[in-house]
Image (cartoon, rainbow, N blue to C red; front, top):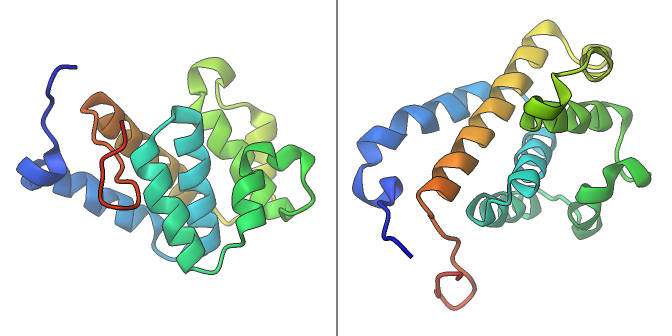
Length: 152
């Protein structure tokens, strides 16, 4: 495998604007909503580094194991509120935008639960986590497994 730079370790100055963007996009949003967005987009994109980080953050914020485990099947689960379902549908629509085109139905569901400011922040948060996923996957920034080993 070709060695690729880890911007978090070698060029933090270049990744800092993305970090700042990610932080500002979620200011004022419910922490549970923030983590659901980050975990779901990272599941879709297959970003182990982000999954590890955001599942850990969600647990620390009081998220239940059952809701974390069922997130990939949120449509079939009664564990999520209508507002969370709207956010998850919007997250999937924007993460898969080449397939979905950001359908009106998903946007209308989001709009029915969130203010204009929240809609914009949620959309920016989805954009930010997708950018982080692409940086981590593209540059092969790997997660660390228990014991300090890097995941293969």
